[in-house]
Length: 260
Ligand SMILES: C[S@@+](CC[C@H](N)C(=O)[O-])C[C@H]1O[C@@H](n2cnc3c(N)ncnc32)[C@H](O)[C@@H]1O
Image 1 (cartoon, rainbow, N blue to C red):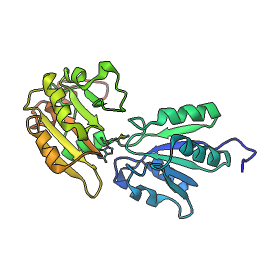
Image 2 (image 1 turned 120 degrees about the vertical axis):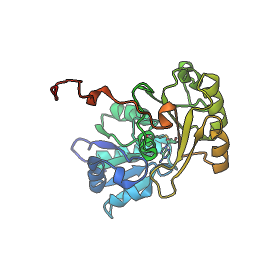
Image 3 (image 1 turned 90 degrees about the horizontal axis):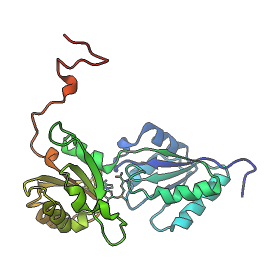
Image 4 (image 1 turned 180 degrees about the vertical axis):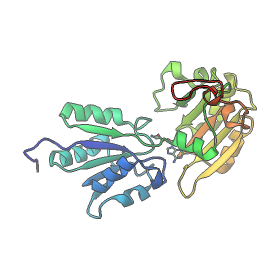
């Protein structure tokens, strides 16, 4: 069935890392109103769908091809139904939304992206750290190690990025922990660099392994993390530094605070 009116907007909603309390208010409202929800059931905690109406049509996307997923969303939007595409974490990070949006644009179907809490930031929060400690690291690199199907550009190989020794959040790579460590150390991170791997951050079965590049490979192998784990590495994840941001120094005068 196709309505006479224009198609409804398809909403890509960041579901956050797992805990439904980490949804944005806007994301939750869209889930509550949705007629059709397509969610990445291999990564999104099903508890997030508990906000949906009892009569909402809910589909897991793990068993669908891109074409099937798009067909489902497009036909519902053309019937004027409210469609939510639930993505894990933040949709803009490894969410494969680019290819979905390209088809929506070609088909003239409007869309909106609602950001979510990425697992990188949920993991940093869980560890109780700031990723950008003054004079320790002022840069965060979100990346993955190249693998069989990862299409990482040559200039973004982990070894190249590691030369900066910045704070790094490495996605989709826990199953290659040995190779990740080898790349980081061969590029110059000292073996004493703090590293933590967080499995299913904010899920009820969350697990955290902490160590240094010297021992994290062995610890992650022992914990048997392969998927749904994020690697955080860099000096900022170690012992708390005494460094302070200049922003709050008494002698630092700016627009919102005068001296004295
Ligand atoms: C396809 S990517 C999606 C990333 C997601 N868009 C985000 O912003 O977190 C999947 C990878 O993200 C990380 N990831 C996603 N959810 C996670 C969670 N709850 N805990 C730990 N890592 C997670 C893992 O590295 C996993 O292999």
